[in-house]
Amino acid sequence: MRHASRTPRWLGEWPTVLVLGVAAAGVLLVALPGVALRLALEVLAAAPALGAVLRAVLPSARAGLLRVRARAVDVVLLAAAAVGVLALVLATPTSGR
Image (cartoon, rainbow, N blue to C red; front, side, top):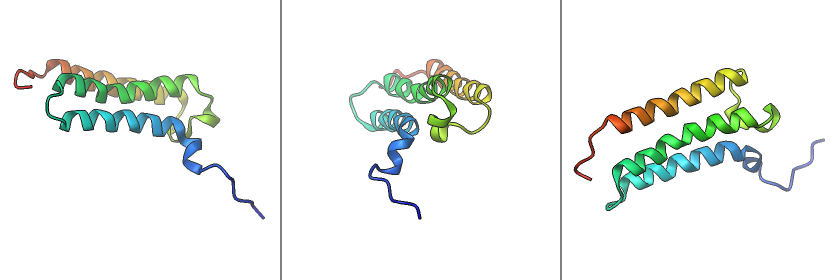
């Protein structure tokens, strides 16, 4: 019989929670008035970059939900997503905010 652990299950998924937290912070900053839109979107672009770094340095057993495919594939795809979002951010004119 399996005993219940005293620590919450999501605590073992801290890399994923951290990446989602950064993404949520970026979305929240986009919604707040008075915050530079470019800064908010750069924070949003930092989320997959953080995911790529965490997936690259953490052992597979501790990467949690960031581990989907082979490590190299995960890192390349997350880094490409970060670069793509950042390229769109830098190419978008934000003179209104």
